[in-house]
Length: 112
Length: 114
Image (cartoon, rainbow over all chains, first blue to last red; front, side, top):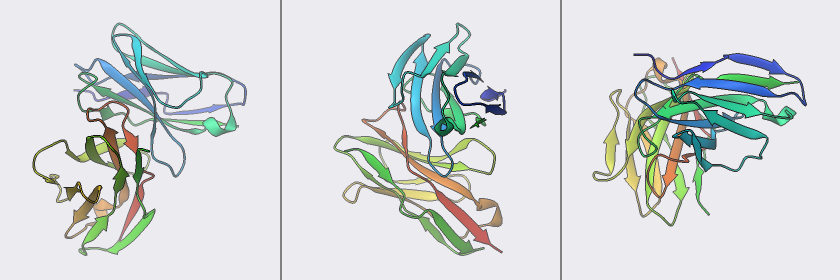
């Protein structure tokens, strides 16, 4: 049984560009959450998707948006990239919004 | 304000020695408490969790943590560490219970010295 998968593993972008990160949840999971982990920091909650809708959101600007597809996979989009957006982006899936989360390996985004 | 604090950013300890990684939180509502471990260049793995019931919880690899409501703490302990325990450990709290919107501490790097 494959766990949570994320693509790509690494990404380098330039300031002002836009980026899309992808996440496939663990089999049987319908809820996906996204976290940003800056260097030397703990992960910070960005938002959670369930039934193709954003259900909860952390303290992140509107430049951060997402989408969940009918197969429960999810995308994280970041517009107008800033240097401060450089981080490890983690996806976590769960069988429902009220159940335990399982984390993927993350996508390392570097903004130059 | 709701917050999670890990006071120690790095903890060096000799192999086979005991270790305690500290975690305190601030909350006026009920909480779920978690410890996650992150090995280099990997994602987070759940080590153990407290949801309710017994205040002492254990993991399969010898770690334990005790929920202390009066001190609002959830310290992680292991009586004898191994080289393979070298990793970063994150305390996390879900305020109001549940698994949504988990708040993480800043992490503690455990370095086990041979």
